[in-house]
Image (cartoon, rainbow, N blue to C red):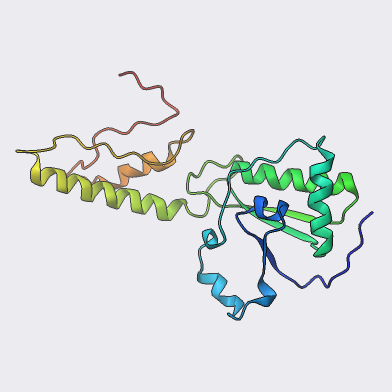
Length: 194
C-alpha cells in the first residue's frame, strides 16, 4: 500500500505531539545546527504537547491522511511518551498501521508525574514531583507557622491527580517523627465527606 521513499535514519518530532504529526507540523532534527546529544538534557515539553484523543479506527480518512504523512517521511518507528491517553494514541496508531498494511513499530513510553499508568509500577517523572511536593508542603507549613497568630491559619495545597492520589500522598514525605507539616491529605480514590 505505502512505499518508503526516504532513508530511515531521519528523526522527526511532531510539534505539540500527535496534533503536529496530523497537521504535518514537524521538527526535522537532521536540519538542526545543534548537536542531538542536547536532547538528553532537554525537557520533552520543549516540543510542545497536546491533549488530543485520536478518533476510532472507523475514521479511515483521518488515518489514511496521517499515514500518508508518515509515508512521505518514511517513518518506520513511532515513539510516543505520556500517560494513559498517550498510550491509547500509540495503540491506535499501531492498530491503524496494521489495518492499512503500513510497516511501523509503535512504542508507548510511560512518562507521567501522576504515576497512574495502568500496569506500570513507577512512572518516570513521579519521583521528582514527589520530592518537589514534599519540599513545597514543608516550606508552606513553615511560612504558615510564622504568621498564623495574626494571619492565615489554614493552607490548602492542591496538586495534580484527578483520578490518582500518588502525588497528594507524597506530601506525607514532608512529615517526620517530631513534626507533622501536613495534617490532612485528600485522595481522589477516597470519597471526601465535608
